[in-house]
Length: 451
Image 1: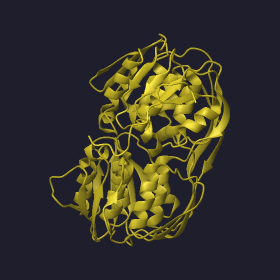
Image 2 (image 1 turned 45 degrees about the horizontal axis):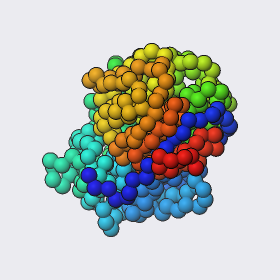
Image 3 (image 1 turned 90 degrees about the vertical axis):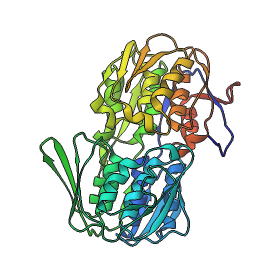
Image 4 (image 1 turned 180 degrees about the vertical axis):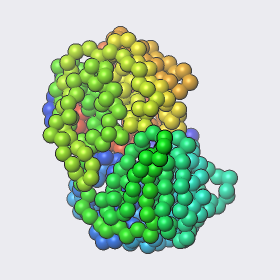
């Protein structure tokens, strides 16, 4: 695999108690959607709290390449002047999504409703990830792929101004597939419906409704049916992006791992489709409280207070919980390493097709740090309770969540934990290190002393 940047190792040193109150950057999922859906609305969408990580900045560049006016007006403040549904323009060159699976997959739904040919490219990691599950329903609606057999980047796709509305049953729980189909459905006459057996992130439905689309949700036997009415007319509005619960997860885990810690993360998204980690940690005995609950732009938010209040215990995490915490299993594994007994995380086949094979990468990293862990099928098993030796380097495999999970673990280890590369953390959480250090965490560049 070819790298375009040198590795930058980073070391987490054993830490004293963490304390403080702070905010994490805006939610990545909502940030992507605010830019994309704002670009197909009429008028101006003003976004506050946008996550300015590389993944989201790539989406901003993509929307500008497609003809929307996208302007940064301040720290996390952006304006999008949309072109209306069906109004985007042919880009002058291929659109590069870097490492962003969410960005490229949702963009396929945006492009599907436009009579244009677009080449989509990404980095080495993204180019290995499967796109077939997105392409299958979009092809049914009228999207064409140049070279029909291709299902990985680089891909050249051709949209259509005459999409066909469909009813599509999700074969596996996937908010990305659901979102791509619903966004494409904005351009199709009549009703486009997605059927899901298990709940997945519903940010697209909420934002479409917030900007004026007709979105209905009904129960159809075992399935929840989400229907969008096509030929929609969306109108730009102000969008305040709440704090990202997946980013907050690392601060929460750190506070639970280090004795004496007391940390509050303000204004975090607590949408029930995203709170599986917090439910699991509470089952393990964690003292986690949602305070000052309120609503922002159609999404529920709260302040999350975490105190280290005694030893945690292992639990079974059922497979049906996976969609609500799919990004948080690596950092949950770090917490499980210090919990008494065994933690079994089931139904994790999806982790094999993330930025890395996260099942294997997590188990291997835990072994490097002296933690007993293994993979059985699509189940990750962590046997905690013993002290964490520390060590490294832990292989991150170009995966930002693996990198941050093991830096979090290092705060509670007997000796420093070294990860082989921290570069990719900027894709989703560029403020990770300074915010953790604000709470009292100690990191060092390379394997040396803390800086």
